[in-house]
Amino acid sequence: MDDKMFEKRMELLNKSYKKIPAKSDATTIIKAIKEEQPPKKKRPFIHWPYVASFIGVLLIGTVLVLQLTLEDPDLTTKNGNQSQMMNDIQTELLQEIKEAKGLYDIRKIQAMEGLGFSEAVFSKTSMAKEAQQDLTYITSLPKSNMSVNTKIRMAKSAKDRINETLTIPSVMMKNMKTPLNQDEAEQWTRDFIEKQRDIFPLYEEILEGNKNLWKKHIENGKLNMNKFNDMSSNDYGRFWIINGGINNNGVKLTYDMDEDQLNTSLDYVYFNMFVDEKFLPNPYKLYINASLNPIIEDGEFNVSWEDAMERLMQYERILKELPKNSRFQEEVKLQFDHHYYFIVNGGVSNSIFTKENKLKPEVKKAYKYVMEKYPHYQTTGDLKKVYSELKELDFKKPENWVQHTPAIVSSELESNSPEEMDYNMSPLHSDEKLMDIYNRFSQSHRVGILEDLSIFDVARLYLFTLSVEDLDSEYELYAKESLSVDEEMFKMKNQNRKEPLYIIEGIDGMSYMYDGESDEVIGVNLHYANGDFANIHFMREDQAWKVLYTEAY
Picture 1 (cartoon, rainbow, N blue to C red):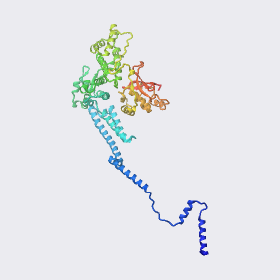
Picture 2 (cartoon, rainbow, N blue to C red; picture 1 turned 90 degrees about the vertical axis):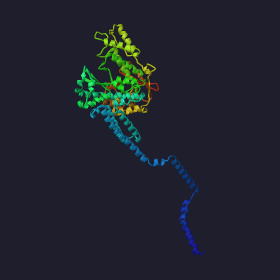
Picture 3 (cartoon, rainbow, N blue to C red; picture 1 turned 180 degrees about the vertical axis):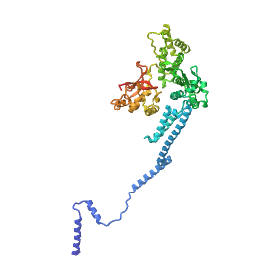
Picture 4 (cartoon, rainbow, N blue to C red; picture 1 turned 90 degrees about the horizontal axis):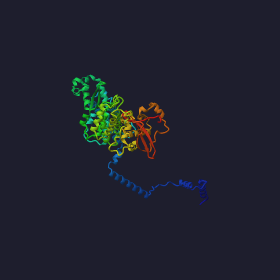
């Protein structure tokens, strides 16, 4: 190696040293060396165990998908057509709404024709208003926040209510062809009474406006029904259709000479032609007759004393034959007490004694009548004691004549004590029927919805309104006679309650509470699981149980 070659290599070596970083960082050094090396062609690096694992997982997944597909052939279709399913459900809802509208139109026309009402008259009925409310509710469902399936269920339920609501009394009677169980009998009875009470005043209004058509058939203070019904469409026009509705729906007409008007009630003979005891048990039939043929009016009997005795015996039969848990037991008991009081004490303008304080001959005759005809009735035994007491006094009125009503107990009850008739408490939302009643009542606040509810069921509705802070419905559940404030003031006083009126949690039962202070007010004890109790007082108003409002609230 000559000197020139040696100097050249030393120069290259010196340059290489200068390129080395000051700090001996192995990573940086290696990087610098690699940069000086010529590029090499990269070969793909394959880790065969990983590849094998991946292929195995892929095969297992394929097998599982195939198995699921074979077990449920529709799985793929379902997963791929969720949107189509939702469209089908939405279509079903729209179909339910369409059917509801069609059903409403048909049933409305049928009801109007069957009653003989014009559309203007029919629109005044509660059945027309309720059906319209249900139809409005159904048509509003698409805009609600409920799930589509819930909307469909609610639409079907409302559609059924429209069908039931627009079924008139004549159809109800003529369709009675199979025996009813207790729940069905209770519902049928309630509906029938409600519908008849709905149409009676409208017929009376129409009759008053057409007095010239029936007044000529009044003979000896009574309406000659044969002549009245022997009419033609040519002579009476539209009134001929109305009279057909009166007859077909079992409406009885009675002439009131004092008021010079026709009054309506149930034609029980006509009713019995279609409603057989083997289909509707006898106590329910008797209750319908007593409810739609009241015999006390303006504080006195509007029938003979013997007929009044007959009605009292009917009430005893109803009380004994009705199931102990019947919704009508309380109402019948009140009516029994009311009628018994009139028979042994007399009314405001219809005393059982003459001005000379002697028992009236017709009353004495009625006492003998009932003792001979119904000797084995419990009430007859009590009336016999009253009769014997008066007989000892030569039927003169004693100075302090006060008679109390006896206790008539259902044959199914084991005890005469009302306190033992406990009502087991359950959450309102677990009872579909009561929840449905609450929903309807909270929307319309129509008292008729509550008419035949037991005092315990009204108590549950009341407690539920408190729990959900529904002040509107709470106010409507109070007896207006007991309210000392108007609705606006009531809401102002109660919208920010610091303490609840009642503790809702822990109530496991209710029972009657009789304090003897008033026959019109009945208390209900609330029993708590921990042994505590509270009470609510109720009174009848507008044919329904209402809560007694006091300033303590």
